[in-house]
Image 1: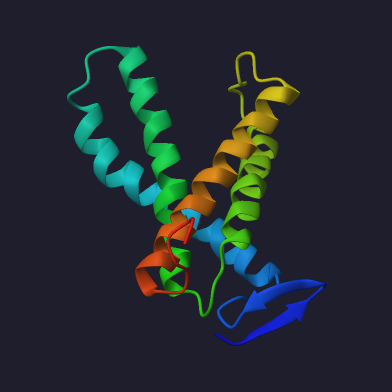
Image 2 (image 1 turned 180 degrees about the horizontal axis):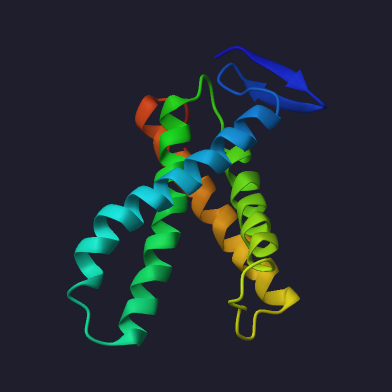
Length: 146
């Protein structure tokens, strides 16, 4: 396998320099996946859920699934390997959601700065995991540890 160096790091031929375009594309994919999952699965599930607590739990899980699905789509659709971009986009999407939430009457209950950082890190990890799985499916990466 032929390798080259970028910023002092050895990279194989599947790696690409960091791209802001793919960060923005990943953010759009995350939001689109969340809307699609929420519109299709959410409508089907929420009509059958009895308690409000279960409804909140399912909404959170569906939001998290949107990051994995969006990252997977980017992993499959992008040329070469793109894992860092969906991870950065996951954090940026959470920042965008937090900023937009300031303009609506609903406030996050107990949502502090550390909660924002934790939510951003979880979104980054989920987006990166989805991208890794997509890249693995296309053969751009091998299994971890190999």
